Image (cartoon, rainbow, N blue to C red; front, top):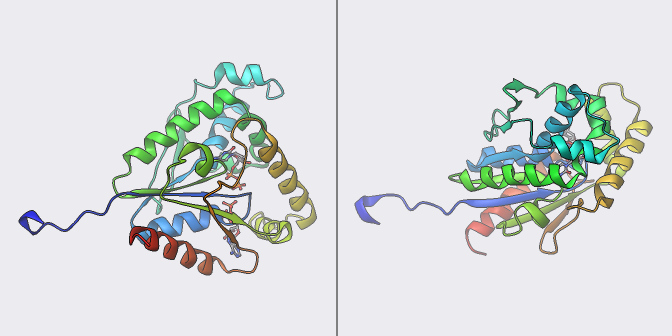
Length: 231
Ligand SMILES: Nc1ncnc2c1ncn2[C@@H]1O[C@H](COP(=O)(O)OP(=O)(O)O)[C@@H](O)[C@H]1O
Ligand SMILES: Nc1ccn([C@H]2C[C@H](O)[C@@H](COP(=O)(O)OP(=O)(O)O)O2)c(=O)n1
């Protein structure tokens, strides 16, 4: 090494996909923080564009109407795992994108090809700009957005475990109703024509049903470190 400079590690790109409630966001944030990587929540981007469409009265039953305005909102995502941030046209929407209304409409908006093309472009440019590498979580990261990712993980868990986790977050929510809503959203996300929720052929599947969050984080950190070591 010239001038005794430390060798710079090649940026590592990690794609984490899976259905709702499998632990993608919590795991990705913790892994990125632990390894000094950037972090991108792509679901938040689809939620943000959905929030904008709802706020602007776009007819969400009409894919043509959604496609016509897909390029309008300016969506900016922060990539610091310690402070995930998202704005639409300069407005902080981190809270409003988590409402039931947005959750119930996000699958319809994210199925529109023009919406996906727009958001996919944003995701690729953020990944390319991450100096140390990035953990990107979503539904189609390993299959479509970053097919050359260094490591692909597909998280799964039983519908019961996922519903229990989600209703724990939405204080007092009925577990059975949460389970039905999750299953419905997963079915819509898995059956759309354009880049559906799917496991990439070269992804490592981790079933988190019986694992604690700490165990899942440790498992993914080990997989990233093994990749970096060239194992
Ligand atoms: N292995 C796990 N065991 C128990 N709870 C978990 C586990 N992984 C995540 N959680 C909790 O479940 C909820 C949903 O996790 P989240 O990371 O948001 O999932 P996703 O991003 O896949 O929808 C969060 O409250 C999180 O703390
Ligand atoms: N890469 C992605 C990420 C999310 N989406 C869509 C489909 C999902 O139902 C919504 C919301 O994703 P999000 O990860 O926020 O969902 P949950 O945290 O699991 O409730 O966005 C997508 O189509 N592609």
